[in-house]
Amino acid sequence: MDRVVGRDRWVEEDDIQNLPYICAIAKETMRVHPAATLLAPHLSIEDCKIAGYDIPKGTTVIVNTWGIGRDPRYWEEPEKFLPERFLGKNIDVKGHHFELLPFGSGRRMCPAYRLGLMLIQSTLANLVHGFKWGLPDNVKPEDVDMEEEYGLTTHQKNPIVAVVEPRLSAHLYV
Ligand code: HEM
Image 1 (cartoon, rainbow, N blue to C red):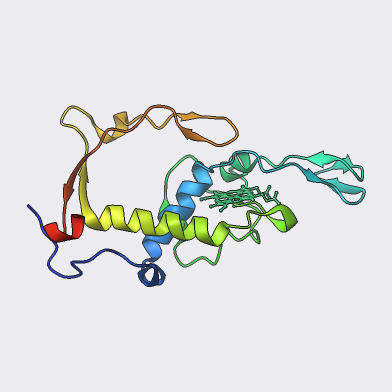
Image 2: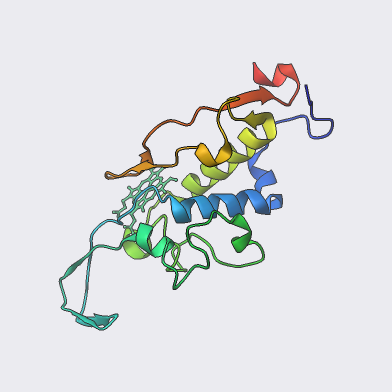
């Protein structure tokens, strides 16, 4: 088995700042597969114009964050999963960059976004660091079913079957 020589321990919260690629994967995942495809209904607080449309005060506005995340006006090759697009860019998920709003923005923004983001990043980092991942013998990467099921939140339609092998010392898994 291909055991880890250095860093034979689990990834901790403090490590995340040194793992830019993990953070980029988390952002890219939330861009193409946002948990909430439509944000909570927001009310327009004054008459305004958006993309040429008149929006009267009091209108219920529903933001399609799934559509924005795949819009070619904002993203190069939007259908491709490319975490590298975030490396060296200051674009974050804190509601300031409207092309990426997995936690929403403004007064109705997810109040637990820091917790949610940290959970995603540290779970992902530990799954990658702690296990060697593969597909069953008869499955090719291009055959993995990424279809989603839409509802109030989005989830995978069919579960992915993966083959995992521990990479760290055995005592860390008990
Ligand atoms: C990765 C995990 C999470 C994601 C992606 C997420 C995403 C969202 C989104 C998109 C909204 C709507 C924001 C808007 O319309 O502008 C929202 C609202 C909310 N979230 Fe989260 N969330 C997550 C985790 C959590 C957790 C862990 C909690 C609680 C402990 C939480 C509590 C809430 C609450 C209470 C609201 C409603 C806020 C309001 O309407 O004023 N979320 N979340």
